Image 1 (cartoon, rainbow, N blue to C red):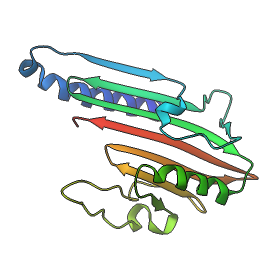
Image 2: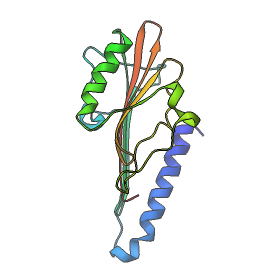
Image 3: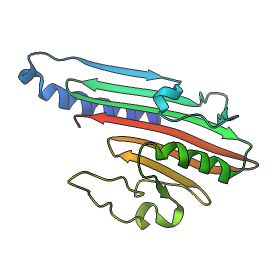
Image 4: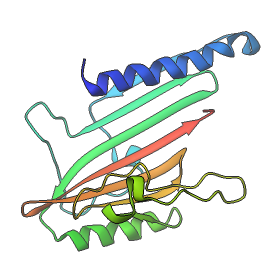
Length: 176
């Protein structure tokens, strides 16, 4: 079984199990799953870099995915789009720093402050903060994050040959 299918099944089982536990309290139960091999700019929550093209690793790669799971008061929406640009890395990174700043302070995750090297996030007013602990920017890469763990936008950038490959990710969770 592929890694993505296993992740999907684990997420679905967890979400539906949590929602079913509330079934008796709510007097009914509704659940749903959405999986599409595309993601709109609205779903991604960020503008597309001017002139960027969809990036695919092989012929089977669709370059985007949208996953939605919900049950009762619980829900998860994930949208991912992969793109490439011939512009310089710094130009693409600057564009997304500015675009993301509209949603709050932008966290920059680089190889030297990510993963095990990342400081533990400080909670502000009892609220969780984003961290670079789960970021994997790779050598020379950069991951930009904005928002909160349950409502965030992420841009991951990496130079590949003469191009900049980048992924736009939007994560929204409720009731979890």
